[in-house]
Image (cartoon, rainbow, N blue to C red; front, top):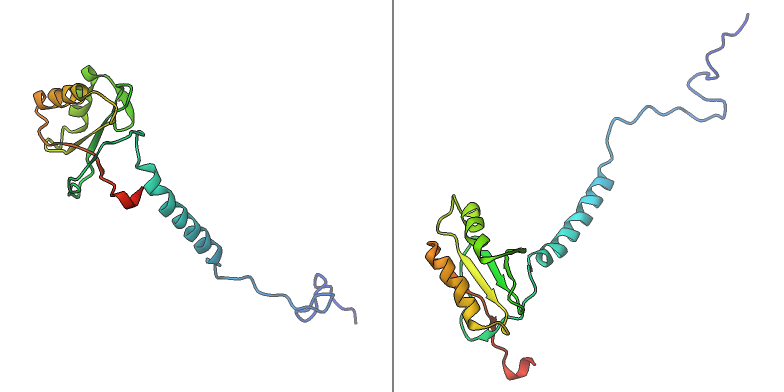
Length: 152
């Protein structure tokens, strides 16, 4: 009697004596979860650093912090007199059309003016005057809290 060839396997065993395993029907999600946790930590650390905007040396005052839940628009005037809307450099003539395009659905948007301590007071007032003339009345000046003698 001749034995039939079954592809090298006899009785479920391979030639080396090991058993064949059935294919896995489950997905291992552990590496996926590990990657997601690492990305979460990275975004938690970098997100606050991304909202800084244009670097400016703000004056110090004793005023309380401004309250509010919405994200305000920021106009920054640097020490050399350059004006930025958020992080984009603009001229005073371009400022109002860009603000109107941004705030067409939110007419009562808060606008923060961040002026460098070295800039002339007249330049800040010029920007505020242009905003007021265009109908933007919810404008606030941003300052740094005053440092006490022990903080320095």
